[in-house]
Amino acid sequence: INVEKLLKGADDSIEILKVEPKRNIISTTSQILLNHPFKPLVLFTYGSYLYNLGRWFQQLWAESLGKDEKFGQIPCVAIGTQDQHSILQMISDVKESSVVWIWRGIDKEKFYPDLSFINLDLKGIVLNDYLRMAAEGVYEALKQKGVEVLLLDLNKRSEYEIGKLLSFFM
Image 1 (cartoon, rainbow, N blue to C red):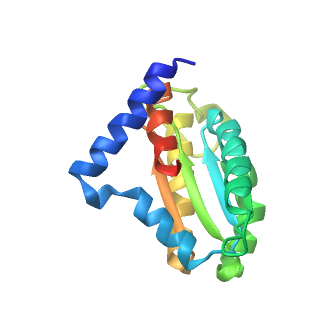
Image 2: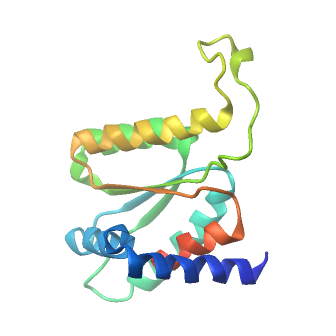
């Protein structure tokens, strides 16, 4: 891991927040936390490299916020398309059950395999398009159900982008 790139991403995200306060994800996430201090937090990761980062975040979130009686969110990390059916059914049927964050990290510059061989109506759709659409569909469905949901995009798989993401939660 290139630590300098990680720190540069974190530093640049702080500069973005200074210039464009409407993009201030910190206030959005803080508001969700304050509005729902005891609801479980479900973190869907779309992009295989984000799952382990999500597990680390789960440990950090639980350890940091689980120390006094004011906050008690239990974080749960889910793998996007693998877990979305079972977990989403519970969340959408009981909308007050949890808060959902979606981390979408599909590299827009890298093309994954064409899925048309599956014999579904997926002609011309590659895996990164499918994952992007799946995450967007989950986000929109939960929003329509009135669930507190937040979608965060990483534009590229890199230390720089991960540094930007992590700076929002530190």
